[in-house]
Length: 130
Image 1 (spheres, rainbow, N blue to C red):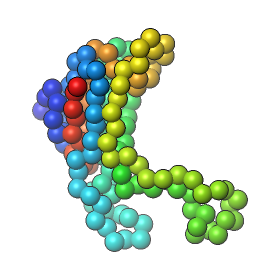
Image 2: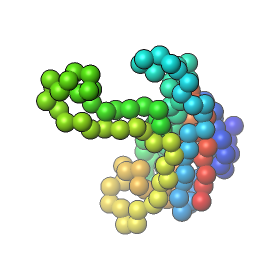
Image 3: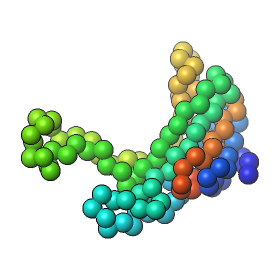
Image 4: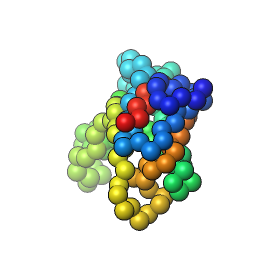
């Protein structure tokens, strides 16, 4: 499936052309595991897309993991690592905006021209071209 925008599942693609912004939202099921490590059959509700940009012919992956926590484990190791508490939960939704006069072409900030978003994860993603 190729669409100008909408909800895409694994293997599907959406396209945005000369968008003022692109919003990506995790549309997959929520994390429902009671397992102590959060393992589920739906990758803990995480959604992953590959973003290809015609402006510089580069591809960048983006993961939307509202149920993933990358916080350090100092609460379980009782501070033995010496690291302060940091990290936090992932994002459910992000919006990409173009950056005017952007000099590095390999950045996700350059969304001029055609942008293709392919779902490479296990959960659906809603793509909105603005």
